Structures are given as structure tokens and as C-alpha cells.
Length: 163
Image 1: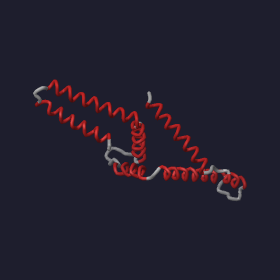
Image 2: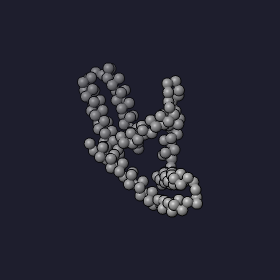
Image 3: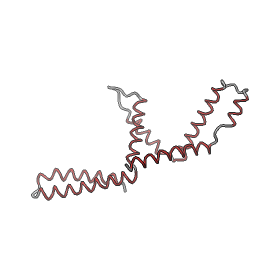
């Protein structure tokens, strides 16, 4: 069951009923019924938003779309990269959490290694570089850091949605 689809379908039916209202013999009664259904649908929608925090997910999606549009420097007269946006979300949702965590950790490790190499001007003979390479964060440490970061954002989402 897809609750948002059901709500959208019911709203379309209400729009049709509003149109048919002009042919009604008892407009007051029919208007009252339509308004009751609309209030119920809006109530269900707000319950879903508060329970599943879908508004926070939407904000993240809009931020991703904005980032794509900014990277592509969408300008007047140029096409909007709808296919790229669609592909981005399909790719994001096609992999499981563990795979995405591994991707992020891999990128962070590469970044850390690159920074160390630059610091020592890529001289592998430097003993300080060797010591720093041995002291790099482990995957377990990266996982802990990422977990803490994500949990902070989850708490922020809960706090914002409770206002």
C-alpha cells in the first residue's frame, strides 16, 4: 500500500466532486461532505509527515536537486537535467546502506592519504610520513565517526519536526 498515492488519488476524486457540485441538487450538503473528506485527507497526510518525517526527506531531496542544478550551472535557454536528477535518485536508492557506507569510508580514506602525501611532498622516504600512515583512522573509527554524524542529523530532524 502506498499511502501518499492513495491520498493523491482521493484528492483527485474530490476535485471531480467539486466540479460535479455545480450540478448538485443539494449543494450545501454536498459541499459539507466534500470538505469533511478533504479535512480527513489533510489530517492523514500530516500524520504521515509527522510519523515518517517525510518533510525532512523532501528537504534532502530538494537540496540534492539544487546541488545538481548548481553543478550543471543551469542557465536560461539550456535544458534542465531531469534525466540526471532521476538517475541520481535511482542510483542512491538502488544500493543498500552498507554499500553506501563503504563508498563514503573509501572516499574519506583516499582523502586522508592524499592529504598526508601532500604534506610530505610525496616523499615516501620521509619517516614522519610512514608513522602518520600507520596512524591513519581504521574503518571502525570511520564507521563510528559517520554513525555519530548521522545520529546528530537524525536528532536534528526529530527536534525540528517536533516544533
